[in-house]
Structures are given as structure tokens and as C-alpha cells.
Length: 175
Image (cartoon, rainbow, N blue to C red; front, side):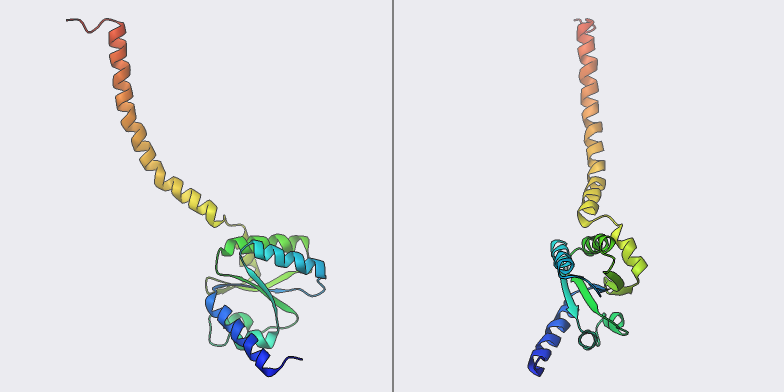
């Protein structure tokens, strides 16, 4: 059994994590085997997140007065959390893919950008494009008008050169 000082350290650490993140996924993991847990932790780490098994009482106390408090109000059973300060879509995709192959891992709820969401919203979030894809699309949209302008400007010179070349070939320019 942990000493009170260790429990207080755990509480302070978890509270600090809850204050620092806006994206948390709450899940159940009952009957998960050690190998499955290892794979889950690896998947979450690769997606840029953190994964922790939490005691219900500890999570509730750590979230008191924070945006995440509604997420942990009615915890029951064995719970774990996955959270990230980075790309929430990448973490949602990784967890959803993992849940499809491991039915013992189930979503219970989540908090995305400070708002509590249900399981359906997590599934919808996992279908969104990643940040990199969105950046690429945005860059294309920004560059497209400039590219079209340069193409039009080059077309005027190119067309003039074609007309002059045809005139020279047909001896249209005589003194």
C-alpha cells in the first residue's frame, strides 16, 4: 500500500497533467492482457500521447475545479486515460484503430479542446484528416492564386514570342 506522501505526489502529478492538457480520452480496459497493454502504450506513445491507468478517486480529486472535472465525475470500473498536448486527431485515430483490433479496450468519454465529448464524437474525430494533411491543403489553397497569376503573366510573354516567331518565319517583318 502506498504511503500518504506518495499518494499526494501522484495527485499533484496528475493534477498538473490535467491542467496542462485539453485533450483526454477516458477508456475501460478490463480483461486486457499484458501484451495488449504493452501494444496500447506503444501505439499511444507513437501518436504523441501519454497513457495512464488511474484510480477513480484519484482522477476525480485531481480534476476538481478544472475543465476536465465533468469527465471524471461518475467513474466506475477499471479506467485508463490517454492524453496529449499535441495532435488530438492523431491520438484519436491511433486509439480507434487499436480499439477495432482489441475489443476489450472501449472508449467511455473524452475531452477535446476543453469540451467533454461522447464516444460517437471520438469516432467522428478519428475520421478527420491529420494536422499534416490540413497544413498541406491550406498551403495549396494559399499557393494556388499565386501560381495561377505567374502562369497568366508567363502566358503573355510566351504568346508574344510565338507571334513574333511566326511573323519571322512567314517574313511578315520586312523593311
